[in-house]
Image 1 (cartoon, rainbow over the protein chains, first blue to last red):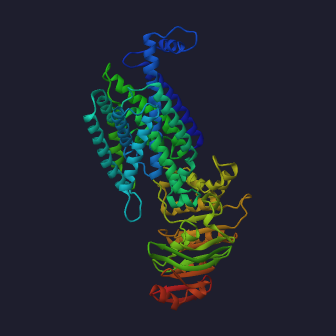
Image 2: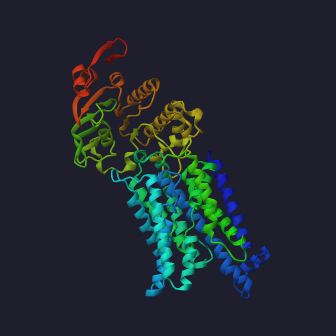
Length: 342
Length: 259
């Protein structure tokens, strides 16, 4: 796999991402023509008249939603790549080891209790609550999956424990929506299925910050993650401080996935499918995978969001339903191929 | 020069190696022999500083390595292990390039590219440099790993300190032709002033290639010296529980026959 071919692939992926972005801002409950879009964007320039209602719908709903979708997709894609590199196993993703459901629970709890105790005026409280939930659930999965003899977590144990912890946090979310007052309850239900309908520019800013910073940190450790592919001992012999690497990568992963989940709810299987597609196209070099999975994750989630918005228009489906419908068959196919060591 | 002083390594309350002291000179091929559970592999890992002993020190060139950083150590110490499995599609060249990881940050430089090409040529793996590691046979894989390890220790202007090569049973699962081939390569490489310490199971291979043999039993050194002194009928009988017949051949020296 030559470096040149990978570069071409990445350039192609950028082009596809932009293409999908244009489709995503054009079509939805109402369609905007390119001319309308440019007029709406132009209305932002100083000295122009106030935007019309249609233009405001575009600027305050459609456009931030499309951008948030790109960013969340990128987070989930990168998160999947990092998890798979860390566990040296291509069958894990953030949704499967509890991070997403814990983050969703943290957010839901914040909404319910925040209302009761009147906390959470600040912009960052929701993402922080989500991170706390994500850290707790991920840590819980690791703690419970660890073998008593050598302290390592086997993949089978990890997946099964993840399943149990996911179920636990999902039922906790269900409980919260049961005790919550009505308007909150609706947003909580949406969380467990995932939705981008709550997108706004504040969410875009926060998710952009964590996604971009997280990806840059991850990219710095791409070489060390490559070394990890041949084994933990071998990576140590190649000069990698494996424990430090694990902590850094796990933290980056929890933060980017939890913050994305805070604004969109649980969206599964993107992180699983994306790195697979890329490895088939361009091999397993993590430098390529991290950049590529950001782009491919963004593209796939945007496509899923288009399906969610267009299939029952003018209403919309929770996006998690779309990603699961596509992701579950792929996951089962990968399991059935059994070329991986568990 | 590699020196281990009074090394004891415990897991829980079980002592895997007890109070071992030994020194290993550059240009010497030092092999550890002993029955299963004698502590050979543990000793190699302690000397390579993968494991940190509870007591005792390991010195490279007279300097205690317990505070050296992984990155710094990796420039002059490499380990060839047994049968490495990779779950992801990596090409042969990518695996060999990993040997250069300690020597560059960011992207590989022209020197790294050149060294990788040279070692691949040397180990006859150039013809499948773009194939996936997963698709290779056991012998081919080990050739790739050997090339990777040599790429790591390749002599190069910026590094002139002593180099250390450790062998953690690298010949396991290989056929006899590969075993002998690899031992010859290791011999040649060791002659370039490298300190080589390793575990090899076949006593005949040890007899033929080693300069110094350290015989371990129950975590302790039973004998330490040239093959002719250590590989004796009495010692082998005592430690392994089977007594060999010794045969001296004209060309390759000592041979052990187990009945």
